[in-house]
Length: 231
Image (tube, rainbow, N blue to C red):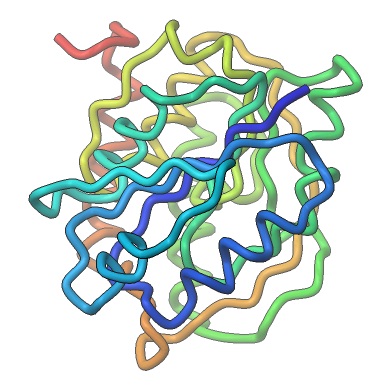
């Protein structure tokens, strides 16, 4: 099966080339779809000078957010399995085989890579951890699932699901939205433990407490919303 690795990028000039190299080094058939969300730190210029035959690079003319970048990337998918990959180095592409394993085995439609299921991780940001657990618990209450990490970046799913839902979120509401829509579609969802090398805010971490408050709204909104598509 061919993977479509979709990478939203915003101001990651220090990590983007290393991340692309790591993804390219994974010994699986794949396409890489990068969406620059109007970076202003030099990332955009780096990507404009980058060329690789398995990599498609798209550019937003205005900054719209992670969800909008993923929406653009999903529209270009030609593979059989989609993997969402952040542009920093917090998540390790070498774990793709573990992430897609339940899909290849025929057991899952979607797989979440959990940072809290026993994999090695950097010890960091207690309140960020608490916030993640609270948001995951609230999401689980609506979806009736027992996820341990709803907010994880690492989500892999069968590309055949893409026509069945529309991504509406422009920012970090993408995580509760896609979780709610997978649940609404009655997808077979698995979790696998992954490693996590988190950053703090001095190292470029972008998500903050305001995004956490917004996530509460989006959890409620997308779980109560009946349509899987934008209306």
